[in-house]
Amino acid sequence: MSYQNPANPSSSLADRPRFDIIAWYPHYQSCLKYFLNTAQHSYPCQALAAFLNIRLPYQQSEPANEYVNMPPASPGTSGSSRTRNQVWVSLIPYIRRLVATGFDKPGILHGWFGDDWALGIGPMHESERRNFLFAAKSGGWSNVKKEYDQVSDEAIPFLRPLDNVGDAEVRAAEASWSDWLALEDWMFPTTDRQK
Image (cartoon, rainbow, N blue to C red; front, side, top):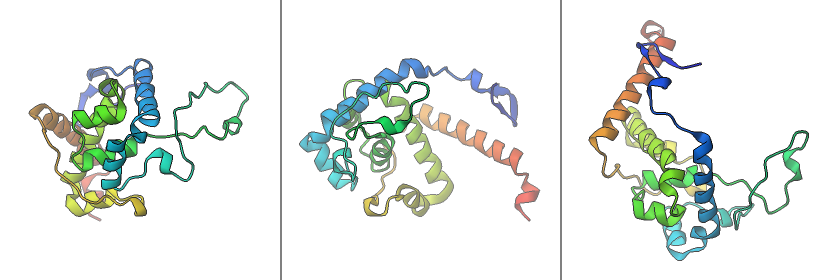
């Protein structure tokens, strides 16, 4: 099943470049492993995380000090069979914080996520940059700050406009923005929104 843009029925996800999740996942695991085993224990990562007011995995109430390879679940087993040191960690909050504060430079991404960062967290980084552009375009600074302050004791200390936004990135964001507006108009006709 493919998504059809109501404003342009000939446009679908099939028209866009393919993303192979199976090929991507080992690269993501490499980034996660590097972040947990190396970066979070390094002084530069700790200093930047403190400056950006975000806890690293080892600082959480359920700390994750190192990468633990989680075997695939077998049929009939539950997640409760995990050992105590197996804590799930998402890299999204760290990518979001780096993007929103302007610290999403290649050197920092490499330092936090390792040699595989471009293939492992690159697609997430690209999506988060687009999300940041959407948020800034749709609501202004105060709404963007609110969106990025979802954990009260880890409030984002500041926001910065995106650096090095290329024409291709702006065009891709505008195209996606147009898709969302068309979808919104299709789902919620203008006359209904005015009531």
